[in-house]
Length: 290
Image (cartoon, rainbow, N blue to C red; front, side, top):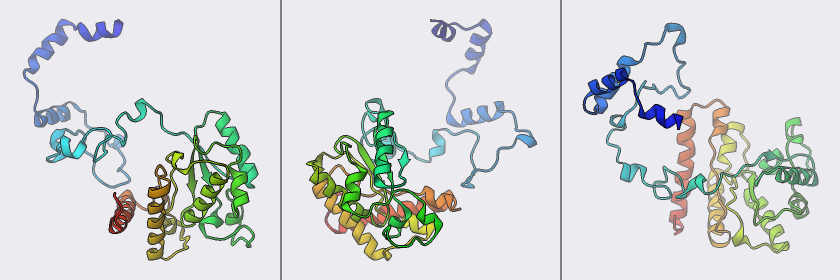
């Protein structure tokens, strides 16, 4: 009640101040008024430049959007262009998936870690496959460096995959796989294991798979397939999933790896968007409904 009371009742001085404002301000007038009331920053309090090097104004209004049309450029939740979320109710009806990137030791070691995380309330899994998998090597091959030898979980066989997800309901737990270039092979292991256990592929949660290797090649120079065959393989996975595993997010494009390698936002995000646009073009050329 106190909150509403404070909002409802004003002092005489506040009422006179509001009355002096007159009719609603235009965007230009509001910007000018806001700038006039904002004290200038002292030299020692100047804001550091943004990492994108794009200047940031002190105040933004509708006029800053340069002909922005809410109907076409913003839309509604769950509708194109999905600027307000891919689902109509978004997180008001279901919270986002919470999962910790995990993978170490043997598949059985990681399986115990997965079960621990699920017991603590995590509702999804994010599998950290070892770097040798990203470089298309098997764990039996001598590691090329200490970094390769000591990272994440090695899965070389179907039995390894069975041990990794033993006792986990693959129809209810959303499983993300960070694997890049060999994603098609690892996904085949995953689906074969699920089929052996009697799971229906069409009932799988919308799990993402990092099928693209470009995000790993640029910052880490880990290269497996030449670009054209790799794009063809990604399109194969997308087409297969559209037909047989419809809820699976068959490709995940990430740009933060390039940022961490030293790229600026102005370079990293356009390059990742270009990846996505190219995959869409290739799928359209195959006759897929995108």
